[in-house]
Image: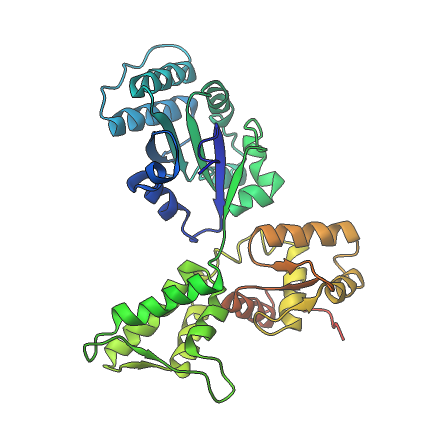
Length: 364
């Protein structure tokens, strides 16, 4: 809550992790009124619906959304510099709210960066918008971006006119207890074959309970939890069964891995470019799902293999993949590393087998 009360901050996270859901709840629910000491009026909008990020288009879009959601008459657009008109319109909206602070939530703030870089087109709207953002200190801004915006300096260079040292809230996977609650809720709410919730296979035969294995495959990622649980429940209802088994989970994981679109948001082109791809392949090829590997073993193997020979490269790659949420590092004694999302671990293994990722160097 304190960060939301600041001039502006970033909310970052993986694609599909739930950033839009979180900010929509901020906009629609009572969280702000319950957790901030002074009243706030939130306005939600997104940049992915704009055709381009020209200054005039940004200005018109933001003015229209702010005034529509505040239910006041929008000012007539004036001739001249579009961002000057935006600045004055925001100032008038702030004055209209009196003691309430205006919070402008811009979802998909980085939506056009990738396409612009691929087409080598400049993004003319960010620098002028940055000047408005800096001038309007009497309101708050929440800018929602993907994890690559934070992790990749080249990606965010398009918006280097905006102060990237602003406070940032990182949206991560659920902790184990919260993830298990979500997994358990799926069987309670969806299984109606005999008027009760579905049962999950318990631990036994060398396997964990079904709930624990779902957690291992998803690493607490809410999108993946919902994807796996929905597939399991739909199959049980289709077959009029009241129990979900380990065999059901194995089949569901195979189905998800067979459809590239389910996990390509994790294994995107930023993650799979050198030298990150070699680090991922080595880690996946040397461990089982969610198994820790001594960091020194990974470092030694990579520094002695072709393609990644410098210590700085290794550190930078590890830090990048950690920020992208596909690698987890625990700095203990000894330091250790793993791929936290089990099904993504399997996805990487499949890409090694198909030749899309390099073969991992031997560690032992």
